Structures are given as structure tokens and as C-alpha cells.
Figure: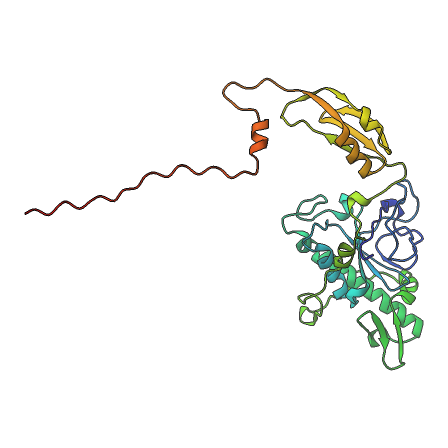
Amino acid sequence: MLIETLRPSRRAFLAGSTGLVVGFYLSPLGTARAAPVKEGVSADATGGQFAPNAFVRIAPDDTVSVVCKHIEMGQGPYTGLTTIVAEELDAEMGQMRAVPAPADDALYKNLAFGVMGTGGSTAIANSYDQLRNAGATARAMLVAAAAAEWGVPADEITVEAGRIRHSASGKESGFGPLAEKAAAMPQPSEAKLKDPKDFKLIGSDVHRIDTVEKSNGTAVFTIDISMPNMLTALVVHPEVFGAKVASFDDTQTRKIAGVVDVKTVPQGVAIYAETMWAALQGRAALKVEWDSPPRRRGRAPRSSPSIRRGRGRKAPRPPRKAMSTPRSPAPQR
């Protein structure tokens, strides 16, 4: 999977992670290609101190995860945001992963809105500087770790396509083997950013990182999330605005395997079930009688059988008017 689901708590930052984490902590999940999280870090988890720039982690298997504070709704922000980090890190897109950010306005707010949010074509614009700095910081720490490990000057080390090299000694490494050592390096106060003329990924045509998962059905969407003892609820809404539940018959609904309960809510009747499929079946089997509000004089109800029957039909054309061509006056003799 190139897209992961994580739920770290703020107070768990910088505590006991394996590999290089720039400014934050995410609970160990094996590798960056771990299955979607079913149990996240508890809210009262201890350890570490708060740090900004909670956007990059590098795992021992060379994968680089970017915590994306913007939602992927089809326009490609996951690819764009990971590309920014990959550019400054000199990583390959094939090793990049996207991780949805946890709910934390202080850490992951949209700089254009002041709160977490996606919209208005702001994802790349307000994340650009943040992610460039996060990627450059991670790169600097990896280079420092390599210099210490190999006993060579840091300015003689190059990074390209996810490989760290020292040409004079012939030494070379991926990110993963140096990640743990890099985590112990001091974080630079201001990492050097690339000159835009040296960009290799930004501005080029890169493949979207979520295409394969969305094509083969392995991508994890909100509807796929499962937590211990979690129920799925669907609501039967009235077809007329202002209608209230007069009564309902849930006899057939409760016979469906997986349906847990049926209750009235302000919006209608809710079916609680162990799975989405059971909730859908339960909703279809539910019979509800509605107490519709009185109709306003001179106004048709918002929804009626005649309106529903007419949905999708083309409006009838007005009858054509008969057209006649005026005759020319008869010639005078």
C-alpha cells in the first residue's frame, strides 16, 4: 500500500520510534507498507515532547512516509505533497508513501484557513514551504549520519535517487540503514533548500502514487475503516422536508444478521449494524410512517409521487404554431 492510515497522539511524538522521524512520532507498524491501522496510539500515551514539522518519517526498509494534512479527493494532493518531500530529500517516487494526518489543528492546520481543511486549491500552496523544509531537514540528517558512520566529510557526500554515496571511498547506502543513526543527529535550524533550477521531480510528469491501489481495490477509504466494537449507522430520512417519524416497523430489519439496533433520531430512523452491508439491508427492510407537516396554501409539497415520477423526464416541448407564407398580391391588369 502506498497510502497508510495512522492515528498518532500529540503526546506520543518523539517516543521510541524506529528509523528517522522528523519532528514527530508514529507508532511502530513494522514497515511503511503495513496494513491499515485498526488500533491507534491511545490519547493518553506518554513520551517525548512536542515538535513542529511533523511531516516525514523514514523506515528501515527505505520507504519514506509523508504525513499529508490535506484530504485526497481525487485531484492528486497525495502525489503532489509527497513529490515536494521527495524532491528535497532526493528520493525516488517509488519509495514514497502518503499517510493521512491525525486531527490536530495546531500541527496540521491549513495555513490559509487556520484550521485543518482541504479546499480552494490551497493544498500545495500552503504546504509547499513546510514540506520542502521537512524534506531538506531529513536529507541533512541522513548525510550527517553517513558522514559519522563512514568517517568522511559531509560535504563530500551526495544523495541521488534514494542512494547516499561517498565517491572517494566507494561507500554507498540507502536511507533505511542510516535512519536510526540519523535520528540521533542534531536537527539543523535551517536546512539548505534546492535551487529550483535543479528540480528533477517538481514540474515533471510523475505517476500518481495511489493509482494502483485504487485500480485493484486495495486502497483504504473511510468506508473501509474498522475499529474494535465499531458499528455502522445508516439513517432513513423523510422524503418531505419537516416530516417527523410517526411510527416504524423494524420486524424484518432485526431479522438481518449483523443488525444490532434500530432507533429514532432527530433526522429519521437509524439502523445500527456490525457491517455496512448489514446496515444497507436493514435500511431497505425498514418500514417507516411519516407525520408530514401541513402543506402551505398555494405551494406544492417539496416531494410528491407526481414529482418523483417526473424526475428524469424531459420537459414536453410547447406545441408548434402554424406557420403560413403570405401570398403576393395578384397582379393588376
